[in-house]
Amino acid sequence: MADEKISESTEKVTLVGDDLIPIVDSVAGDNKHVKAKNLNSEISTWYVHATSGSDSNPGTPKFPFTLRQFAIDQTSEGDQIFLRGRPFSNTEVLTISTTIAILGISRSSAFTNITGAIILDTSSNAVTLRVENVSLNCTTTGFTKSGGNDGNVEFRNIQLTHRGDCIFDDVDIRNSLITRVTGNDLIINGNGTIANTFITDNDLNFNGTSLTLQDVILDQDLIINSGTVILEGGTVIKGTISGAGTLVDNRKGLGTESIKTLATGVIASLSDRNLIIAAQTGTADDMIELTGLTIGDDVLLRADAGDTITVKHNDAGATIKILITADGDLVLDEDNPLRLTLVSTNKLCQNI
Image 1: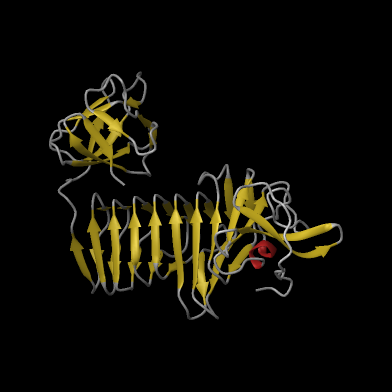
Image 2: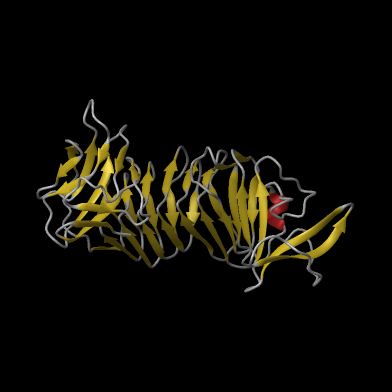
């Protein structure tokens, strides 16, 4: 932690919200530095804003920080940083030396775009970084760690673009997109799970004990240098699989990719279970139904390159209703696979 880190006291002031209160820590000029404390835990919540943040602010919803190293240095073990406002951009190298969460509102770079590089400093202790709904665009190098302890990540719905090493120990990555522009590949030295994620322009090098890939699309090579990699669901490895480690293939028989063109919003899958949905020229790119499945069948969908397909939730005109977990239509593109399971004669449910 930096020397200027704010120390805690026990004086309390009022903050709008049902379960957060600020703890007054110090006074700098006319500004009070406070932590937003969750009454049910010791977790502190800090706020940063794209345009109105300032390091002279206390990091509260009304007076947020900017996302710079100063804001990172205020955190303690388990703290959360909420990113607010758009477009959000940061060009520093951020060094993170304690377990924290960074939470945004969208992985689109139009909302949150953290640029520069991120380093997990594990010289004193293991560090786990949780990131949700954020675009991480490492423009200078990559997403790496320093030090001899574990540097772990938990990603939910993020877009990570790197131009250098991308090295993690334990991982829990879901509903994300990882892209390499230049530099080295994705390297995992620990254990964990990657699910519903598209890994593009990266080889995946595994050096740990056990890694599960569930409904993952890897468009380059999988190199298993040690341990075991388990393939599940609709995982697709487009490159080669090599290395001295062990591969366990538990995938269901989804078969090779098959392109299907929308016809009045209906796709007939027949025996194919790994589908690329192409838009029909001159018609709306809405998919309302998928036929040809047997109860219990899984199917993996993604959009054809350049097409954007809207999968309609519970469409009134469908005999077999497609039910999306979020109770709303889902936009399908080429980077994000959608897995569905036919659970009854008239219900095809999202499988997450």
